[in-house]
Amino acid sequence: MAMILAVSMLAACNGDKNSAGQTKQEKTEQKASSANDEIKKGASQMQAINKQLLDALEAKDTAKIKALGKSINDKWLSFENAVRDRFPLLYTKVEKYEQPIFAESTMAHPDLTGMRENARNLQQALDELKTAKATAQKASELLDKAVKNYKDYVLEQADHLVEATAKFTAAVKAGDIEKAKQLYPDARVYYERIEPIAESFGDLDPKIDARIDDVDDPAKWTGFHRLEKALWKDHSLKGQAKYADQLLSDVKDLKAKIQTLKLKPEAMVAGAMELLNEAAISKVTGEEERYSHIDLVDLSANVEGSQAVYQAVIPALNEHNKALLQELDTRFRKMEEKMLTYKSNGRYIDYTKLSKDQVRELSQALSELSKSMSQTAEILG
Image (tube, rainbow, N blue to C red; front, side, top):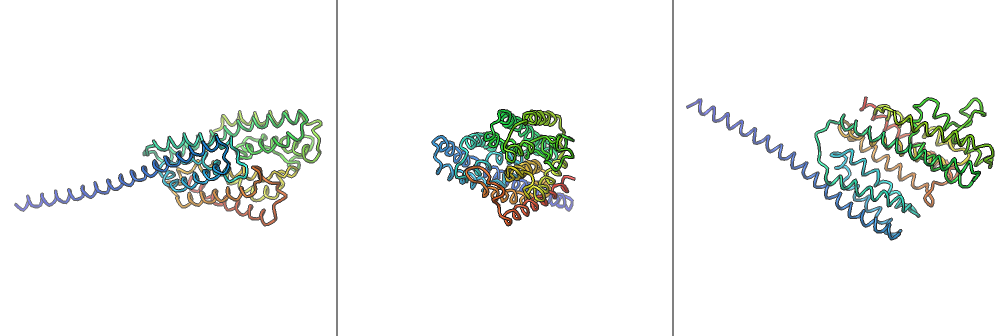
């Protein structure tokens, strides 16, 4: 009788454990289901606003475009953390299109064509988000995919670099100074976004991006800044055709080399950190674009390129340091907001118009961003 009682009690205890375990599992599943529902609801609501934006863009209703751009950003902010936790790769995909939409909506004269393209891509990204299912993939597997996505980003920028440089150099060869001046910043954006990658290919970066004081023999000076000097200081394109041809050849060579590049997260982060450091210490002085004074274009592109690296390592940050993840997200967002204040009619103002205090603030913000990025290297290492 005693043995039967003991067995019964043991069975009851085991039943309680199983019951408790089941309850815990149910709570976990319920929490996950709730998060998924929140994400799907947010994505659907965001799509509805984005559809209104597409209609407003078609009608060229600037006032409505500005209001809807803000509404899209507000909606995204309301559930982006849940997306980042559960679907880090889709998070970066949505951000890729949402951020430019919001940035343009704050401009006095938004780029309607660019906004329309981003809005269409955002609609597709949100479709993916609505049907996404959380998987049990390890952070390392997600990171591998994210690194591949970053390489795709670099290749995309390299494609645009070749296209923009071809237009710029064609204007140079045609002797059209004003057109070349207008096209010069467009090409610079794509190069500055991927500068750390370019610097990994030996002498290619000096050939493309060297300044006059970076070369021992001025007669061998080539690249963007050689042509920049001809345009803004010499006011003449006589004899510059050979430098235009060389520049286009070099950026094509860069694109070809990038296609064979094998990227590692640690090297990516180190490159982004060094780029932000360089921006904070030397580029912020105005020495990079000393003739054209489009330094804000370069600085903005450096931040955008570094942000692409940050987004690539989000899976690792999700697993190891969510506080740093939030810190970086906040710093990048504030940096974007700061850079927007230096735009007028959709373009960055002349760097010489910044006060010493504004330059100091920029330098400090870039330094703090670089310091935060350096902490991601510890996680990946």
